[in-house]
Image (cartoon, rainbow, N blue to C red; front, side):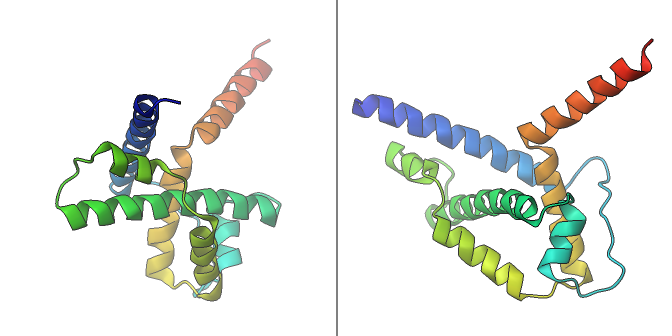
Length: 159
C-alpha cells in the first residue's frame, strides 16, 4: 500500500472516531431525558451495574458490550490528552494515524479490572449509567435492532 493511501485511511478512521466523540459529548448533555434504571440500594457492585444498564440474560454478553464502551472511552481519553498537550485539535497525518489505531487490550482489561474492584455510589452510578446508555443508544447495531423490532410490531398488528 502506498503511503498516501495509508494517510487517507488513517484520516478517515480519525474522522469517524471524531464524529463519535462529538456525539458522545452531545450525549453528556442530552436534549431528551434518558431513563436510568435505579438499584434497590447503594453502593452497587460492577455486576449489578452491568445487569441494570446493559440488561440481558448472559453476563458474557454484558461484559462484551461494556468492553466496547471502555474501548471508545479510552480512545476518547487519548484524543483529549492529545488536544490538551498540543493545545489544538488540528493533527498531522502521523498523529491521526496513531489515534486511529485500536486501543490495546491491556488498557481495556485494566479499565475493567478497576471497575470490577470498586463499589459504585449513587452519584457516580447515575453519571456512568447515563453516559453508558447514551453511548449504547448511538451504536449502529442498537439502532438497527430497535428499528427492526418496530417494523416487526407494525407487521404483527396490521391484518
